[in-house]
Picture 1 (cartoon, rainbow, N blue to C red):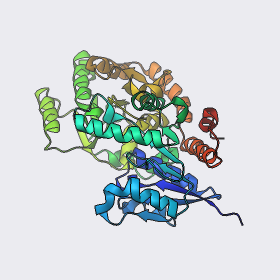
Picture 2 (tube, rainbow, N blue to C red; picture 1 turned 180 degrees about the vertical axis):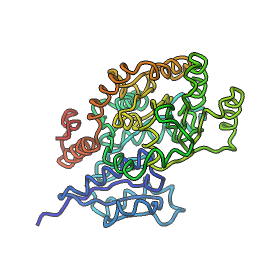
Picture 3 (tube, rainbow, N blue to C red; picture 1 turned 30 degrees about the vertical axis):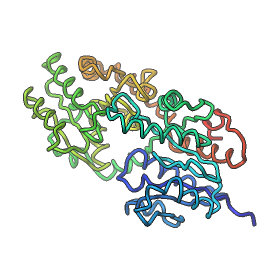
Picture 4 (cartoon, helix red, strand yellow; picture 1 turned 120 degrees about the vertical axis):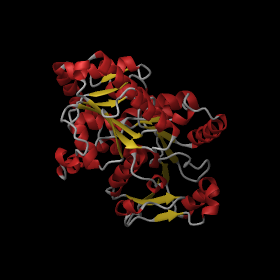
Length: 396
């Protein structure tokens, strides 16, 4: 009986709460477990959260137990573990997880290079991150990115040949959205007395994260009021975690109070999937003017719910929203964003057309398609062949 090929898989991200990278890991794990010709071995230098136990049940987990050795894990302990367990291919799916030297081919996924963007003001951190990312990317056999925008960043900032970089877009789990909606209702989740179809939905994730551009969104909302006072019934709902005592948040709160908008702008904090998708489904539009995104999964989720999207004309957001699927705005212009807010309220026919385009475009983004693309890369690497980009992207 032919022995199965052993694949090493990086699961360090499962030490954190659910986020886009964790979703990427879980979807890929689910797919790989169905491939009978391989055995999966999981590697981490950090204890995993209990909420993920069902996803990794039954798989060999090699966890670093001595936390004092964590600094030696990637380039000393991990290569030894890969060799000892006869791993044929290792996939690092998160930052700082690709060993520079190992006996087997290494793949790495780069979700974004935000730390190397113009928003990084700490030079020491920039240099440290750049040196690690540069060495890892050049040591990897293949670099996977989740958007063309990230691919371009990797090529330009890290000096990686485009032939070595493959784009595998993230997906939208429509079944998960439907399951979340099935267990709740707008009446149940509407704790803020919102009127259906009379509020803008802004998913910030982390409200005080500079890249989420929440202060500009608030300023645009104020200008929207000035432009169209008869539309004052529309509220702004901002979903995401925040620290009320942080300087960043207190400054925003002061601006809101100065403009007498405290009854119009609602910070929900962290909400369940059911509440998130319910609030999104019954909103006027999703506002997503982030300054930088590796992919922008919330945009595709809004597409799946038939909700108009206002997002940035930069980074991966432009890539997902182009072709008329979303309203693309200058993320540094509150006036342009305000005009977009007005448009979704006053041009129903244009919004209907845009949603139709978005509904068609969302079919390009599926977890199944992503997983098959990555699986094609695995197989070609295990066969010792170069990977034609068209094959990897098709997932055949």
